Image 1 (cartoon, rainbow, N blue to C red):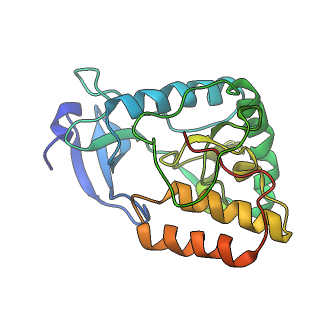
Image 2 (cartoon, rainbow, N blue to C red):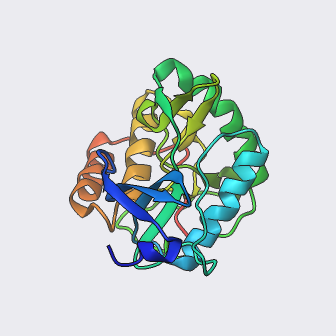
Length: 218
């Protein structure tokens, strides 16, 4: 697996999951880790590493990317992060995770767009700058782990970007909220899952609702 030698990784085998990326168990210097195949380039991952540092400072537990021996975050399309040993979370855990997310949102109100995510979408999604921040972008129970010590970890930060904080916190369940969520989903997967993105765009158009706080794409 070209690229993983940059960490001196020993490949143990594939992992389930990773809807938008391949995951492999690897061992780096005797430590169990996860290798993730990504499309993002080094500038995009540097942005993400900075966000993960802020999220950690604001009380969120996560698995930060491990630099390769050269200091690069990606080599050959791979990243490596620590393995977190825990049990899958559930819907009731999301409230606890969102406390840290709110603090992260407040700390990233004036952040630049993530490199590589400048897009032109067939939707009018621009929102006032005061309503956007850095977001995880894929918060659900499947991305939460209950660790052995009882703390919660939020994993899979691939979709992090500048957007509407409500994407992380849960849109209202009215028509406008559903339309705003669909708009954000379209923005998240326009390049990697174009069929899903088009379906979400159609949902927004057919709903007849104007998203009150749509996702901001810059």
